[in-house]
Image 1: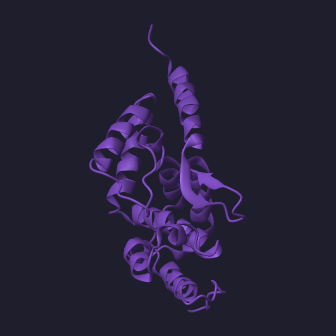
Image 2: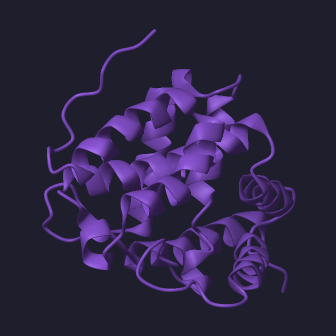
Image 3: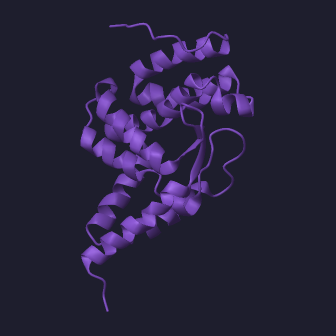
Length: 202
C-alpha cells in the first residue's frame, strides 16, 4: 500500500528528530554542555532573521532560513565533521550527498526535490542566498569560540592563522561587515584581551 503525502511528511519529521542527538564540538555560551545540530540549525535561522542586513548582496531571507534549517539534516546519517581537531576523512561529500538523497527522499514530491535542491545550493555556495547562509554557518561557531574564551580553538590548539584561513573566506564572501567584526574579536582573543565590543563603522 502506497504511503500518503501526509504519512511521508510525518515520517520525515519523525526521522529528523534524530538531529537532536548529533552532538557538535561547540559548547553552549554558558559552557554547560555541547550544542547539538538541531540547536545549531535553529540558532542559525535566527541569525539569518536578525542579521540579514549584513549580507553582501541582496538576499531572500526566507530562502536563507530554509537553507539553514535544512543544511545539517544530513548529519543524521553522515555525522558531524568538526572544523578542528581532526580530519573530516575521505568521502565526506559523498556521504552527505547520499544522506541528503535518502532523507529528503522520505518526503513526497515536490517537497523532496525542492529541499534537496536547497541543500545542494547551500553546499555549492554560488548564489547570494547560499553565500550568506554559508557565512552565518561560519560566523556562529566563531562567535561561540570567542565568547567562551576559546572553546574548540583552545581544545585543538588552533592558531590565529588557522582561524583566518578557516572562517575568513566564507564570512568575507557572504557578509564582509561581519568579518570585519570577527577580525577585531579574533585579534583581541589571541592577544588575551577578550572579545570586547566591535567598533561601529559606516
